[in-house]
Length: 146
Image (cartoon, rainbow, N blue to C red; front, side, top):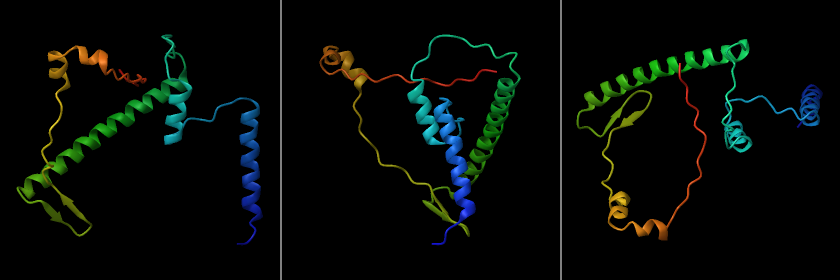
């Protein structure tokens, strides 16, 4: 492996930038990574009940508008995907697989399963809930209303 002075200089600059954020206690910009999702869930596991008013904040309003536009495009793409999927399923009829030049699809029935009807069980024996409680921590939901 050869030494790459240009890459080393870039890494040193990035390290300096990172360290300045650590010193000033400035969190990194949120991105689409799984680590950002996890960090946000750990940093802000509960809401305060407080409402922030960003109706006059140009940057936050632009970000919200972009979110609405992206969700609209995603809805359109999801509808298009579903229509194409249904077209292929209809053409397959009862076939299990279809082969194409670029790949294949399968359309198979999953195995039947037996599950415990906990609602009926607890209705018949409500004391079981007190005997075998399972507490699940709540999580914050991100809801959008436009």
